[in-house]
Length: 375
Image (cartoon, rainbow, N blue to C red; front, side, top):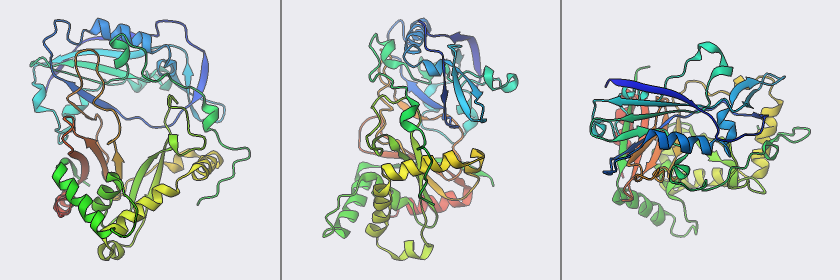
């Protein structure tokens, strides 16, 4: 697939914004969204999109800033209204050939703008967006300002206050090869089979397990299982709905392979359920304190491993990004999925199915696929 860049623009906030520095996490996740043409003469008009983007950068002003380091060497956002990168591109390819296909990330990478890292971190835009128009009339882009493009105010006003998420004083932690990407679809009937299996085994337990607990237990067979946890509603009091920033914590379960092979399906579900239930305000505050006491935060970076990390995007409104020309027809990660990571995506047509975007070594992928479809 060849893509031609037509224009690159720096879009700045439409009005004045506060000047301040904000601590940030070292985490970046590109995403891609596909839209079918709706017959409108101004379908994904870039002028309208840039105007909306400029307006939304006023309340979400940290996104228009640049990176820097504080006196302790910690990464932070310098809110200086330098703007974000907006790229207009086109291709002679047909969009339908790419939807749902993550096997060749050399194609997906081209749909996300390239960042020039030669100028140092203070020159990097924090948000880069690319609108790629296909031969068929479809569009692929990154998204973050859909409501404003339709003339609406942000669905939830941003709440920018990092004091809610700082370490306690003093910090008091208490808790101690070649690969491929594949997408596996589980239909509503297959998911109901798993739920029925769990409910029958747990008939007298009185606990109703979530779909995620059940699916994660089905996936987890012979390895450590990592699950990202959204801390927004685990903290006490919960963070405001519009809290602007990353509140993701990583939890992990370790079990002997023999135990996982011999215990019941419900017992495996129970392991996951109990882990997620024990993650409360004290647990998360202790994690924050632990990070605060680390002299080198780079030691916390997860290295290469063969474990599984299951990332549930089931409840995210990933198909509700409507710029005024209709909802997205498909959404997925826009980067090279790391080995062992599994993204669980909801169905774009609300048919009850789920898709698992997965990267594993080739022999492991074959074994994973076989186990996944054993009910």
